[in-house]
Image 1 (cartoon, helix red, strand yellow):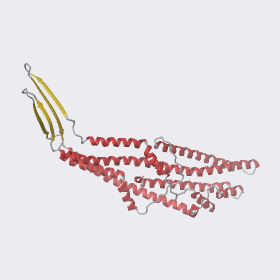
Image 2 (image 1 turned 90 degrees about the horizontal axis):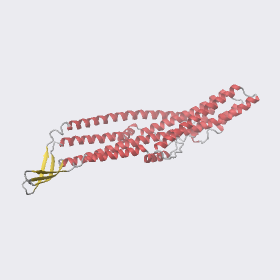
Image 3 (image 1 turned 120 degrees about the vertical axis):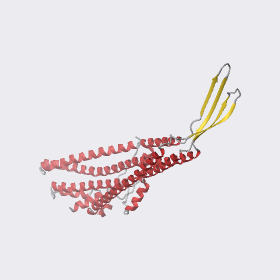
Image 4 (image 1 turned 60 degrees about the vertical axis):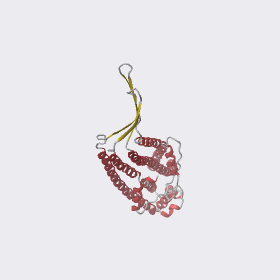
Length: 401
């Protein structure tokens, strides 16, 4: 099995696990600008902010005019112009409440942005994996085609039997099918990226992953995630707004005021005066304080529940990432970690050794396919592990996007 170790180590060298790229970041910035859902979210948040501001506007002024006729030529007219308003301190309180609501709206927008960009990042990671798989499959397909031609000629000369020839042709068919499926999946992912970019042309040519290191200090990671999670930020701001609503509702027992101008001509001579009035909220404010307190408690419980959920998801993701990283290290160690930096291509002299041994009669067709299948399957397993690791780390650090 020594040739397999050398070959697989050379295969790993093409992966570029330690390379750093900013290509994904550029894609995410483009999607942030062009994505239709993000544009819709921006307009929704803008409308919600404007709606919140209208809650603190003054009511519309009122104007009334009455003209009455009596016996003979006697007439009476009256005109009243008035403006009602809440107790002045309520406007300042509602202004503070609106600022808290604005922060909550912004957090909701950040959640939408984060989720869409995380989806886009996972698509980019899948594209990288599919391109790496394509490189392996193209090489495997080329190798199978060469063997198919060679064994067809040997069969004509009588140097090979039909079983060996059929075995190679079956390998060629299977590899061609895998390559076609890979290409179809790759094109679908590129189309998904195009759609996320608002159907605006976008170019993503990366074939290696960015460097992502799993932190060894879990508590430090936990504190960072909890302090930066947008869902928790949104609930915190909504909770602050709900607490402020409680204090505002408590203050609404204060009377509403009305101030205006009145003109009356009942005695034949016009009289001008000031209209002053107020209303006592005996019924309008009923149960509003209880309602606001219930809403505040609801948000507090949501915040606690979300915190527990985030912690649970984080510990699962951390354990998964650690397991994936350990398994990847085992692959690299088992198949020659030093060869990762060698730069040999998988289709070079190493695979040629097995092919020469096959054509020279040193190994049988079955032995050849056993050896080659282990090499390729191990490589594909490694690529899958890389992809899973990158996605888990992307989810752990999703609030950094």
